[in-house]
Image 1: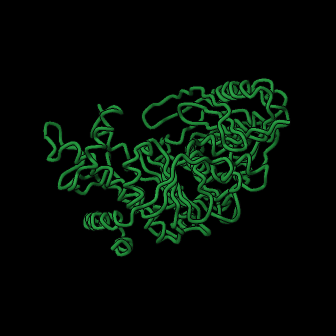
Image 2 (image 1 turned 180 degrees about the horizontal axis):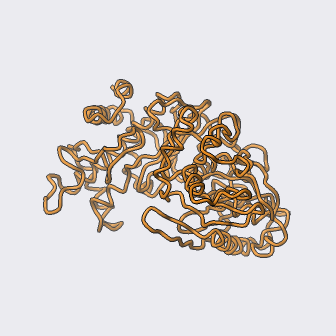
Image 3 (image 1 turned 30 degrees about the vertical axis):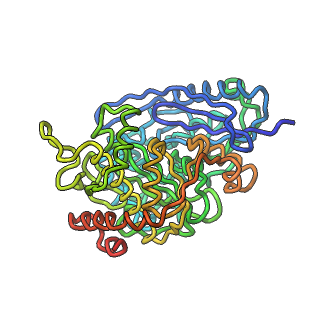
Length: 497
């Protein structure tokens, strides 16, 4: 009998992507179907029925290419903080309020105040786009009637696959206020907010089998009847699994428009600044701490909006020859959330702003600006790991680099040298692969072992100690500049000197 394949479904903002891999992580089939939504100022909604229709089509396209190969299991990841109301049988009652919908922003302070002690223990503050404020908005709209139920985005898909309402997972419920330490809904806080705990779903750990594929779903998706459906994780955690960062001290940095860092810790980190928050790991009694910066490669797009790939390659080659790199904090908008919390922070390049005023020429040439942004991102990345270390995390590495910017080999080596730890570049760092890893590990009983089998490496990097030493003075000057602007906690400044 043929070896089984493992399926992952990534329910994103613009599309649903499904993929299947074999027992070595080789991609056997993949397909995507588009999603559309409706935006109106702070509101962003999608139709849950469209989520399922697009998932059916994507899965059907994948299973058609499997030509009868057995499917071991599948898991689903989705956007964090996307929620909807359903009937008791799981029928959607409202549109899905998306992860970036901030209509309930004015209610975030109410949610924060009601559970401030617990949120501090868990290491975060309630944010305007999180799910708990959205529940308060529904409350104030009179929509939380006696039989209303809350569901999270992936629950729509897993319920449709197995044919009945399902439990949510501890990853997707983080922004709804679930107590990850006590492993229960914080009923006193919910009642203080005039929310009935009975409307909230049962919660299980990621990797728990929720049920098996029912005949009706099998007919439309092509999945074999009885295929195990496994509780998933948020897309950010799924990307971490796809990078293979599941052992203590291992980390994944995703560098796209913004910079996100996630890793593994033996205990819940304690960060008094509130910049770090943690998910429960799907294996052992471990935590997945991290944070998301507002800086990243988006600064390059802002500075060089018309640059195509050949132009970026030429800028990279020229930047590698720059000898005097000005300090740069590569923030395009206003406000930082990680590795420090500073609502008024603005980007800078040398002595001026990151983006020159209209009609005013920059004092630096293009290669210097490019080199400064790349170095500034590397500085933010190193500072992120120093914050995580101060919070009690093991940051010994290795670190997996993923995201669109990981295609730039020169930038990768610069970041590796500044971090001073080995770096791995995964071959296929898609969230869908992370869900295939979770599905395989759940069935096999060892999720880290599944990651070691299924996550394939494209390349490995080793830091150059001499280059690391040469880069440290610039990093220390960067930290001193942030401290001088009043953005950085003095305790972290002392650690960086």
